Image (cartoon, rainbow, N blue to C red; front, side, top):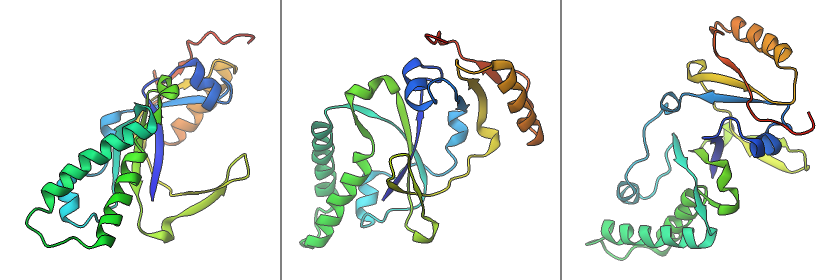
Length: 203
């Protein structure tokens, strides 16, 4: 099962403040992208197939592909079929359960990287982690009452680039609070806190 941490290439966006930033009352945290790559890159798909599709524990970043979901997923499946045939050439008949496991892996891995083009404005990038140790899985209830499975992943403070304060709060008050918290964690606060440039209506 994939666990997803979503980011955006847009750090100060009106629709994103509306949808994810508490209607402009939250903050947007910007990270250094290269520092967030804290583990090995994804192995080549052919190598994964040869290793019987064992999903390993690591963190990988992917820009979301926007389009018609089903068409994009089918295109990825066709691509992986070619890779599968290439990787299994010369082998005896592959057991049916291995074929099903391979197909399920494609649906999980690539399905998490595709989104309808209606959300293209988000410019989303996702960190996708596959966790096999069920003891690390926790649960919470979202605001709709649905139970959500999640895992905790620490993001080192060195990854922090800057913080943008939303357009619908008292900037100076929130800035003072954030600076106090950051200093207590040993972070230099000079030029790290910014004010949103979004002209929020009716505020």
